[in-house]
Image 1: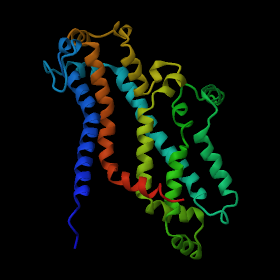
Image 2 (image 1 turned 90 degrees about the vertical axis):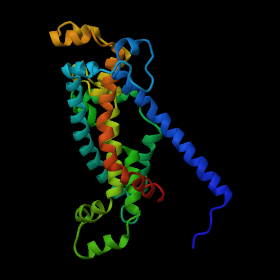
Image 3 (image 1 turned 120 degrees about the vertical axis):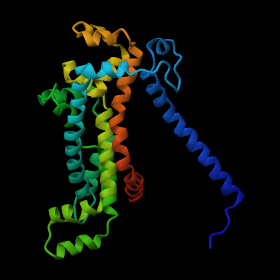
Image 4 (image 1 turned 30 degrees about the vertical axis):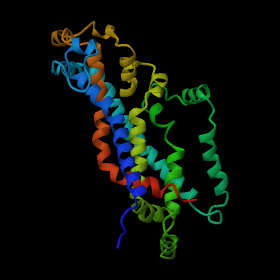
Length: 297
């Protein structure tokens, strides 16, 4: 029989719920404000009158964005980056985490190799050597410049190897007795049992690739090769009106009904929607993967 909660426990629970509610509002309200601005009249948005509800509701900014091929070109590049980058990153993460999850007697030098990975979290070669290395490989201004340099995320490797180490050793030993090798053990035992951790790492990889913008700015020579977040960064910092020189009559009519602020807000909201759609399907694994993959030694 569960005893009645103490007064201090009840007080803590109430305070915790209030704190989490306020924290959630801090995260949600700016997003709601951006949505309201994107749906508002240009004069109200320019005057800063829009808060959490649209003023002069209209969809002109979204219509204008849908007519701009630059936005969808950048979105397609980001989609390519997420798909290719996440697949490569997951493959590399699994191949790194599996051997590093073994004991020293099974993998001599395991500790040394693990520290070689960990030290890259503490120190790095700097921006210029990083850029020069990518340049010398000949992949600048291509999709590979966006996915290969970040293929091995050490934090994800540590998370996954700790999860692997927490799996029962008896399963691996039984597989070896039955004649399985390491490849069979990895793909037939470890991977199916690691769904929470793999989902967590996948979510990290997807969000990281989708939200990354700085590497696109410095690794892409042409703005037409920018991923979506790099494109949005150039738009949000300064709306480039020179791109409006050759617009069709439909765009010209919409341009007179919108402002740069409403267009920016519409593009920011549309860029956030894909992650908002993906996250709920992986969220149930998120906490389980973080906890199970972070408490092992």
